[in-house]
Length: 85
Image (tube, rainbow, N blue to C red; front, side, top):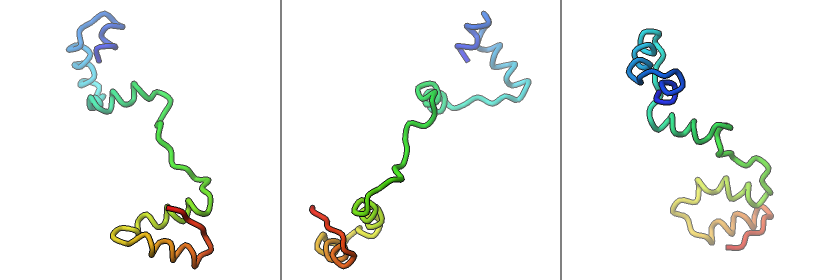
């Protein structure tokens, strides 16, 4: 809002008033900062082209909780995937 007020030479209160009149809602401070710093879109992306061992590990990540590495190695061996910890 301060940038808009500075651009048009008025107060932030005036900008806020007219936004309220026209039912234009403000972003939260964290959302505004995120959008300002990442103007090209979301900088985080999920890899989709994974090799078979990495795809296996991705799938086993949710199953691995509480399991031992030997069990993961055994499953990988059954599936024909070589894993080195």
